[in-house]
Length: 426
Image (cartoon, rainbow, N blue to C red; front, side, top):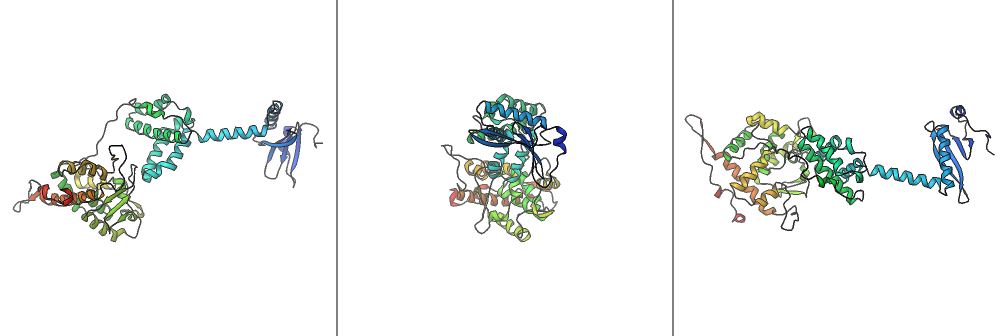
């Protein structure tokens, strides 16, 4: 017999205390309140399949006496229909867990953690996650990813477009497409609705990074860098940038462990994704790095910040240095890539495939396969040495000084035909 023949009252449930051992206060119909030292919880006894079963309904005060009785009635109705309440609850909890795991935000965060951050450098992965947090999650983060339509996504993107954030809208669409494709592979979505929106947004205005692609103008910059007297890491990074023309983030965050100065190679992961990149280092680049190693070789970063060796140069350091030299609006740290791309192809007649590979772009063969990380390695080694020799000659020959007046006079650059030529170029 239960200890209480009469149904419980709310005051009784509220005031009952733990007295050194568990207590059960019965309400009838199998419902009782279990009083433990740390909590009070509602339990339900019932019989199913000839066996006595017990399930937890909730805790007090989160579940009131009235709510517990309503839950009892609901479970009794399930029994009357021949369904087992505990099994139904487990299935409901599993559905809720699956629903939470299948939301756009959950899948997107999983993609960022499991895939994206392994494909790009840390700063780029964080930047893309932040874009999703700001522009995608607030509107559609809680939506089941399989239920998001192209119209819903378009509305999210058009809000950005109406604010004048056209480029951001395109970037978010691209990221969402990657998330949807990941969800398809994981069996959480059936299609990439972002692909339906191709051409649905206005074309973003392309803002090219400022770059001095004219050899005579670039020579002025090279000489300015030679005479620049800034913080050692900044100076070294600026001197190295023209020779290797990698992305600024890849340069400033370079770690010593990725360099093999003995063999003259730099092996790193491109910040925009893709396969790891092997960059041959010309003689001039190795000399700069060997000199810098004597300064920062006892730390992780080749170009540590002046604020502490535990972090690299900040994102704006190189551009600030270029501005301080008088090249604001004419040259950016990213511009070294445009300079190399233009001069190597148009003036030094290097094959576009070699240059694109060195730029870390996705170069593919006729069958659409991406070339591997060492493709054209020897050709690129010779190309970069020729490029470095060309820059040395350019620095010295484009402008001569009149000894009598000291005025600068432009002259034709030395013929590129005999700069750095090797048997591999013939």
